[in-house]
Length: 311
Image 1: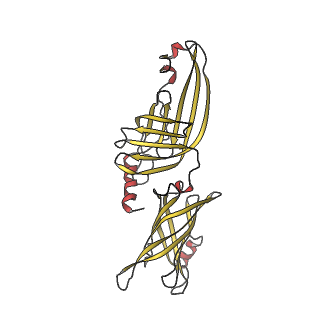
Image 2: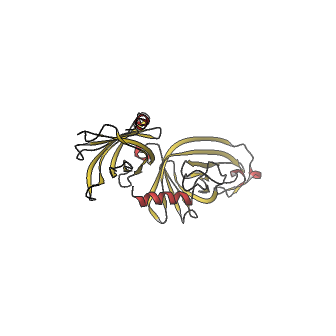
């Protein structure tokens, strides 16, 4: 991910955010039914039969001024269907409760295709919710049969579109994009320096979905903070697979290393092989053609021991 895209992502979150507080669209029992042009509590002469079902979903969000979409892999849809009797006629009223850990939640009347979304504010640095949500009017289109719903929020960020796909069959590449903390040390095949040298704490690896891969691969950026630095690594179109509760990433990229004697920079081929589990990335990055072969170990189990040993 380019630094400009990372900054944009932070700015977007700073300008808007979601809430865990459900916002009601109002009581459906007191609204006229468009199918019968009648309704309201006083029109009921029978009891309502209520059923509901829950499905998993994943989706993307687009802003009017920003063509590159942002993604969410853990959306949830709860459908409620009510069979009510209005003036002696049975009428079906359907509603949808939409929740997303990123974009928030709302409730929609599927007979009028209208509803509200709750958009709370977040701290621009920590992204933690800091205040009560802002409530936005929204509309919805789509169907369970087509397995896609589109939510339009005209007043959010100049116009926001949430496209939600029913069924949690999305690629694991949608799940892992995040910013990961990394501690590392380095080994050298040719023994130019001792094993487990240059321990470096507080590094960051940024994983972003590759928008051109049909949700199948990711792009990775990692900058070495050791002295000397092993450069800034860029891995594009990296494959992601899942095994039980861990995600496996493997790919080839490059790093740009500055020669500390000449000051000249040069690109070198680099490879990454790592796993992600419980929000922690472990594995290694290799640079085969530098000093006979360098391996950067990501979050090794003995990192603290190495640091305390003074290596």
